[in-house]
Amino acid sequence: MANVGMIDRVLRACVGAFLIALPLIMATPEQGMVAYGTFGWVMVAAGVVMLLTAAFRFCPLYLLLGVRTCPLSK
Image 1 (cartoon, rainbow, N blue to C red):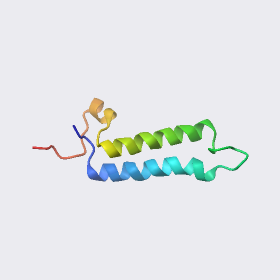
Image 2 (image 1 turned 180 degrees about the vertical axis):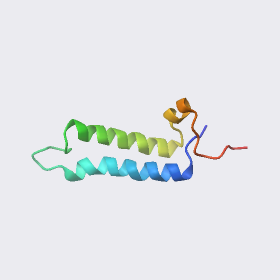
Image 3 (image 1 turned 30 degrees about the horizontal axis):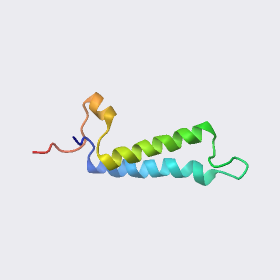
Image 4 (image 1 turned 135 degrees about the vertical axis):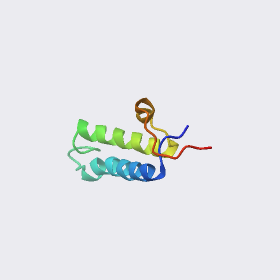
């Protein structure tokens, strides 16, 4: 039951990749693996969720809110 359309998927994938990459790129050896501490890990987790919703074309929050960005299948 897909509820995420093509434009939404592309935007989610781009933003998800950016959220995962930013704290990893900005990290210095003193900070360890991820910059920004806990906030960095939250950004990585949000990025993973966005990539998964783009890959599976399903967003549980959209289901709860009754939102669909893809056309209805026949």
